[in-house]
Length: 310
Ligand SMILES: Nc1ncnc2c1ncn2[C@@H]1O[C@H](COP(=O)(O)OP(=O)(O)OP(=O)(O)O)[C@@H](O)[C@H]1O
Ligand SMILES: [Mg+2]
Image (cartoon, rainbow, N blue to C red):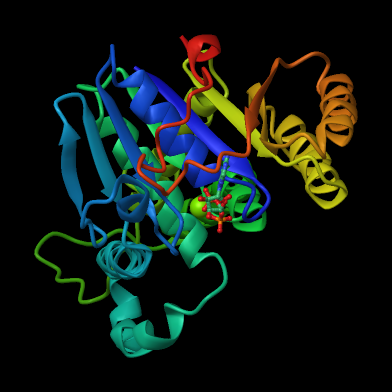
């Protein structure tokens, strides 16, 4: 299974190109296209009612729009239930009361998105390709950075937790052991690494994020950067190139979209600049088409968008 992310500045044609690529891939392979953008338009592009759900568009192509609000709510509910299960004494704080406020916390959307990508990849074994249409750059780079950021935090938290356990171990040793038949009404806290649920949970999370990070950086995965032949799109694309490089995520293809007779020169310059900035990533050019949205569906782009991805 291969995983392809379409990124780029707002409005450059990410969704259109992602949809057209998924359609082209589905001629010979089984493809799932997933829209991660809260402002979905997959249904409009393929001209079918979708409404944040899923449907088969053709024998080989499945369309899916994720419901970001629902995802965030589920993510938070799950985390709160894990938290209250692990830290029983937190129940005294009645976390549920904070639920309505916590859902607006910074980072929740990003974590929910990342969890959804993780689950989509795990559940997508039947597909040859999973194509992700991503939200605007800022959010995309933030959630893609999450595995690394989180692993750094978890690493530190594991160290702190180990120190806590060491201190508990010392305390346990200086406490008088119970005599036979004696009842101890106090809660005895875990003091070994094996018995500690918090440490186990941290290690589980660490492995999970490491796994996802490994997949996103692997041969199996690729990023396609869509841009337009104009200065603003070019500058933003350069920032995305830098962001992907920092995160060690593989950029495989550049698509110069909406090229016309008038902007052909700017297009050539922008392509050259990005080719150099990326150390030679291939560029495909897509013309601005008057046909799109007319008789033909928005996904029927004549240019070859996928041979490089095979
Ligand atoms: N090659 C093309 N020829 C003609 N129109 C195009 C082409 N590519 C995209 N468009 C049009 O440009 C507009 C923006 O495209 P699209 O929604 O795919 O961009 P986007 O990058 O996904 O935007 P957003 O950042 O809002 O998600 C749409 O109206 C689409 O039909
Ligand atoms: Mg879009």
